[in-house]
Length: 581
Image 1: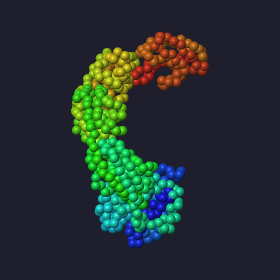
Image 2 (image 1 turned 45 degrees about the horizontal axis):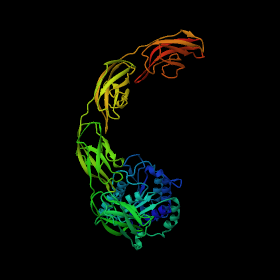
Image 3 (image 1 turned 30 degrees about the vertical axis):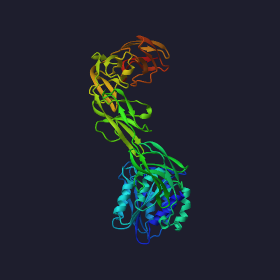
Image 4 (image 1 turned 135 degrees about the horizontal axis):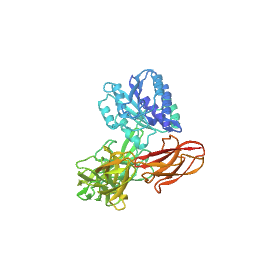
């Protein structure tokens, strides 16, 4: 944290030249600031840092505060100029920071843009100091914004303090500073902050640009001639400092936001990278993270070759059925074969997929809707997913039929004869008339559990009425209803015979007439009970038409009931009163 405090002190010092140049602190007030460093919330560390650093600034310096993520969760427009830049604003900034609620997302790119506009960056020199503990989460590009502000601004500078950011995440926001001539400084913990405070407040630290930095020597080389997506070894010499890395960029690239692949170099003299996903000429570089920014200390040319690739699969397949796809290609970790609609070009949006490390061939399941599709080999390259080859696939309709009696008694078993694809996950269900969703069934049975591969048993619901029995295809991309046939459920009846009264604790006989389905039972409950649980005694009905119940020890009125277990739950078919005395 001393580094973080030093960073903030340095950046605020950079932001306050002798003449009245205005500056804005852009403070991350997103929900992630509740994370802790050494047991203390990052939001409290940030508030304390602002109080200390601002307290040491000259009152004539013109500075303000803009915050984001402090009012609403999940809102990328939650950005506010909390304190307009001006003189003697330290107290107002500290008070405002103390009231911020740390809640939302991290729209840091738009926040910096709004800060630049508030500072009239196209007319006057302006400096923004971004303090963030996260990367952009609102689908914006901070690197592109940095280039835009540098081009349009009059001496515009953005400095970025990466607060508890990993090296990888720090790289994603450092470009905002580098493209505007500012500095990216990583901040780590509270101890570093406390040590840096004395130095920054006393003014002994000067901007890094004021001191000429000697660049160390470095080399990088490889004898590999990798193909697309392939891993290869590279050797290097150089400082090997924290943050240094090797990267691969298009030939002739000069900046540091176009790397297609990279690996940090600390911990040894060798490194392994993955080649980009397109064949061609590239440069392999040693990048030094110097005190004044990043520098390419050494460069060598590499050629990335194409790799043989092909797919083989049936030209036509029935909807919802599984099939094999044979493949040839780089076979790198993360590569996969997917199924998409014909003409789909985005690397995502697949309907079905299988990673290639599962074997060759891989197995996919066809979608439920017939039509033109395509199979693709997707290379998971370090610079993004690439489609190496695509072949057409025609999905033809699947059909199914159902046969069963047109009506059934409530709670009874229904034998359903079916014909259809019979694929894993397909099922026969029972729903109310007019129900269109593929879920919400009252009863169901998987076809693969059918012992004779042509019939399944369903339990009718307990409420009489109109229903439908359906064949549901479990296809890639969702469920599809292949067939549905109406069913009428008639009311079930039951009757009970038992003594009018019994003694406390007596074991007494009871008889019944009813559906006697699996799970049906006769129970004894307190008089008037509407619950289908909490019985004091019970006996299942399926094995016989009579049985015995045990009277409770407490005298009073009770009910004997016939309980029907149906496809949609339990219901009371008959009730008879009995007195315990």
